[in-house]
Amino acid sequence: MAVARATLALHVPDRETGLCVACLAAGPCEPANDAVNLLVGLGLPVCPPVTRRMSWRNWWHRVRRRFAGGPQL
Image 1 (cartoon, rainbow, N blue to C red):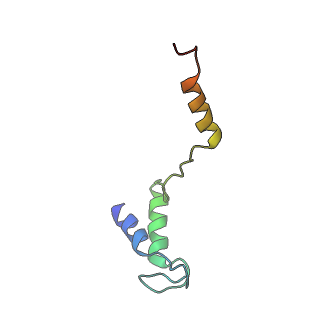
Image 2: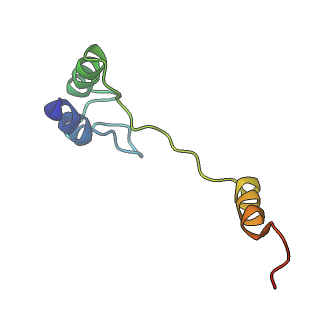
Image 3: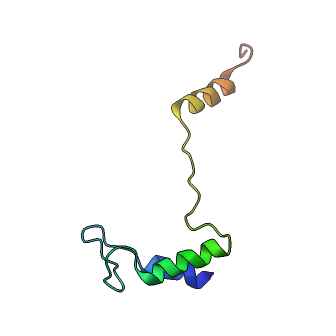
């Protein structure tokens, strides 16, 4: 499992040329494809989970809740 993640981290395509940095293959190279297939076969997530940022509306409701209440004497 750690080897598959290390392989994915090493075999990354270049943004300009689209070639794999490690093996200079076009598109997804074979070692990276094998690593992804191994992780999927084990039922593990390939990509980290996407987290949502707090929206302005959620932030405002949180601030409003803090100041809501009776008058401060």
